[in-house]
Amino acid sequence: MAKLGFLGLGIMGGPMAKRLVAAKHEVALWSHSKGKAEALGGNACATPRAVAEASDCVFLCVGDTAMSREVIFGKDGLLAGAKKGLVIVDCSTISPKESRQMAEELSTSGIEFLDAPCTGSKGGAEAGTLTFMVGGNREVFDRVKPWFEPMGKQFYYCGASGQGLHAKLSQNMILGNLLQAFNESIVLSTKAGVPPELMLEIIENSAAKSGLVSLKAPLVFKRDFDPRFSVKWLEKDMQLMLDSAADLNVPVPLTALSRQMYRAAIAKGFGEEDICGSIRLLEDLAGCEVTTNQ
Image (cartoon, rainbow, N blue to C red; front, side):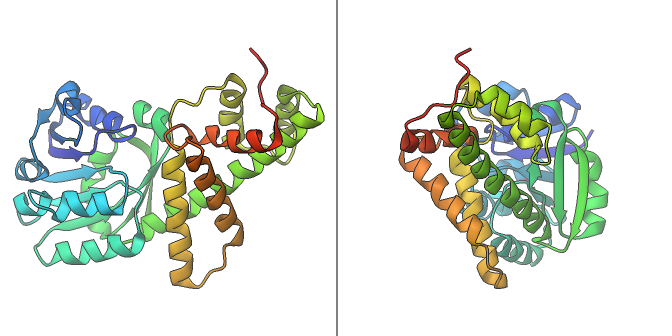
């Protein structure tokens, strides 16, 4: 049994923390939202500082870079309660540049820091089948890897601090652009009169086959936009991609356009819903709804 902590108990963080509790670890929990920590059965803490005081390793999964910095360095943050040698594992998708800076700042206090963003959405978090991309000290990762294992099945060590985040953003870049391509294609074919379920079958039996499309298309057809990965978070990730591309002088014109389409979907009120719900922006523009009416 390990003394672990977990901060951020949302769509992803909640099921991840639950997996650690179910693995019989002693888990200190904290969330901005009252009642979430108590519901998971671990040790509910009033502050991130209290989580650090009770833990040898703390995982966090929060929404953006500012939130990550606040729960680590803010008043009553992790650093305020950290013992020398504490390992902080940030599973959030945040700025690689800022993550590297946080690692440097923490190292001056004897705190180890790993960036370990994950992919697999809500279903993977619930099933414990997430894929983690890890940056930071390899020896530290090897030491704490057993504590990752209740939450995931694939673990990729990507290199120095920030490299896990670069890998995650590159993967999400494909996801975001691919989803936009699917949205355009299926709206076009549906308005032209091709039944959506037939179009999906054609895609599934062609070089355009995609795991993302296989997963999301049936949800679009059923008009099921309950959040597994929200539009607002994909748009945030795509901005991080653009920032990193600018830092590295890499042109990413397709990503820039896709990001604007997701921002437009947010402006239409779809930001809190699943990324597949972004199709409604194009449906509204085209005057066509993609549904099987089942």
